[in-house]
Length: 322
Length: 279
Image (cartoon, rainbow over all chains, first blue to last red):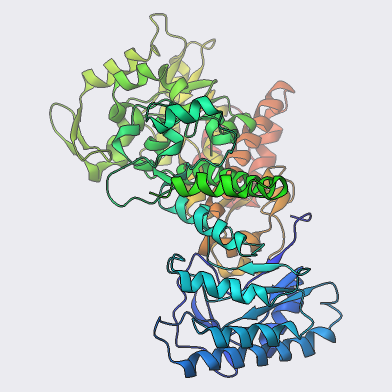
């Protein structure tokens, strides 16, 4: 993919990352064969071989339990800054990395003071952008977490990108963007595909008033895209579980109005059949649709930012949360 | 592979039996036939269910009345009796009164090759030459070449796609087990002469690494293996049209086995009965 920007992160957002293994001199990552312990020199050797466009600096960002001690959190900030400085020493003398940017990592758990210390120190270093680490995993919907994000971003320069890991649900994405985050990981469509789910939420902010009235009265034919279907079992908002019996004889496209290959060529009944018979093709088609849908969502965000319509988009998405 | 990808790889017809008996003829009618259900416009062969009787034997119980399957859809039992099998195929309008061709079946259960080729030859000798002969369940490269020589025209086989799903890539000199460590640092494509999308973009090393984390590797190899089969059949067709088929067979065997000493004896015998002498 020669025309894309290549970013190398430490961890795979779709895989569990057990904690308790990082040390003062090493971090652990999880590969196909289990845990791999990486020293600084090994890390920089890898980065010089990869020659990505951007890479996340080595960091002590293992998930900390909610009541993690102040001491542990302080240690992760200290270690991460130390790793950053060591990486920079190698980076700045490296021919291989002369066109590569290093992304500084902001730690600090849920302690505001530590978060501020981390961001203020990181800003002093010559990094190409900033990663807000430690917000992965649990739901973002508590105000303290969102406030931390705001506070951290308040300290960042306007002209460098802000990244966040592990946030993918449409409503959480919008919360982060409204606080100044620029870049997200794309694991959410993949995770949903693995569960046999299709992204079906509506992000097109061009509903005409007539349809809107009909929808509010519960008799619009947009019901399919506005409400999450597949009501058996656990519901994940914004998605539809296609393994539900109701789709067996449903010869409509996966999502009406979607222009992706899957929706233009195949039906819900066919997808249901593929899923239930464990055909590999199910994942292929679903992935095509889910990526297409997610990219469309982000395009609508960019359009809304440009046209000053973020509030409408946020309302539209929030409506579909349940 | 999606029906679209198969179409792009110029496959002329594809095989489908499993969904029939489980979906039920009514649902397929509603979907505008099997073509409508899969969105596939070219030819479709349906099957009697005999192979599934063997391949799905764990899901099935064979009785006097027929074969009883347990459906993956809902755990319900279905009885696929001879009557039902035919009924379903009738419902899809695949059987015409004036038969368009002949299917030679019952020879893909792994019987001895000596026996196998003799039965094929016997069948083709008795069939009218102007109607296509479809040999069911035959798919290994050598078997295809020999059976074309013996007079068969069409084939179907799960082998190329199934073996792909186990990480095995087909090549003119055999197959590559891409999961093996020896390919971890092999930066060649599967086959440097192959024009398929996989060989154009990816190396053996990449596919080897991809296996661990992503089922996409199986998809890529499936695409290659289908391309391999189609190329093989295309070379066969072209060599027949150019009246160079025996030379093609020589070349094929040499590439696959290296030297005459390695050629399978049954193939040498079978080919000699149609005047192809391997040297």
